[in-house]
Amino acid sequence: MTSTRTLRGVIGVSVLAVVAALILIMAVRITQSSSTDITDLDVGDCFQLDPDDDGSIDLVDVIDCDEPHDAEVVMVDDLNPDGDRPYPDDDTLFGLADARCATVPDDPRFGIIAIAPTEASWEARRGRMVCVAVPYGGDRATDTYDPAIDAADV
Image (tube, rainbow, N blue to C red; front, side):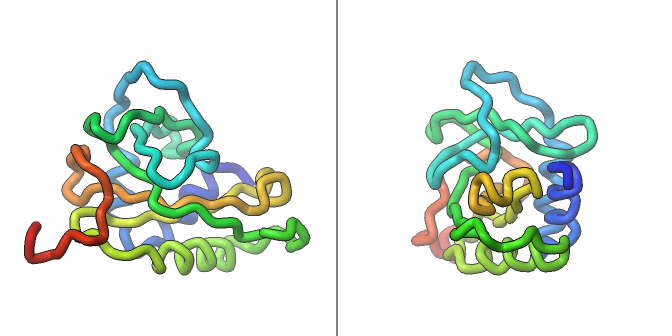
């Protein structure tokens, strides 16, 4: 399974379809930071989205969260922690990833998107997946994800 198929599946099952669509149309921003595989990021890493021509996202540009950014990792989890589970079908995989991301506390300024592992990374990385916060409205965030923010304050 390719990362393209993985992202398309995430987009297809995500309840945040509008936010996911924004990811696909965001302009490329050139930064001086190094590119990192999206599933290698840690909680609190902020980054610029740089989708490939086909809409897939493999590598991202990690930047300081004080800089305007497109997204922030708010949770990391392993869907195959013991490395002994077979790679699931798309519906099961994206259902698991979405369910894990649904446990992230809300910040009304952001939508959450699950980035599921590829088949190639399933065993090697224990099915590592990330939950990514993307600002609503297509703007870049100038601060970080904070579930203590009240919807009435937005």
